[in-house]
Length: 202
Image (cartoon, rainbow, N blue to C red):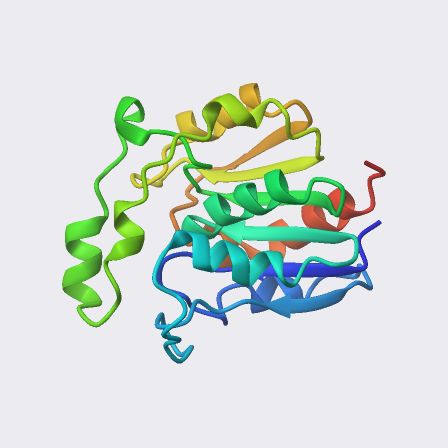
């Protein structure tokens, strides 16, 4: 059972994204909402200049049994953190993320041009991350809940299905009409699933 829940946002860095879910969780673990320095409302930090720095930020929070609950880009960091500290990451909840896979073969929409048009002040280095984690996913024997919507062009259901096939202890839940903000807009439906998932014994 995790003693801490870390909530990781997507590329927007919105630390409020997971609040509707967190407020509905009955699981008593400490809840921590991570922000990305230089993204959203989180002040920039000169020491954060790449994905490795974001990983270090999250990894530093994992010193007790911890569940990682992650959206989109945050899901890649969650996978990296779980690979780094598999003995302390008890559960994963991944929503509409690439999970570190190459999205080219899944018909995914390239979100970057419109995203940067809407968020011109955000750092650009995170969009260049291309490490392929596929060969490592089979080593993650951590209970994983995959949450997807069937109306998300950025991370289509096929991505969730592929992750479900690659991760040894994963289950996939697809929500009709769910888009890329699924973790926020479907909070009422998602929170009970996460509670049940966090109560499972690794």
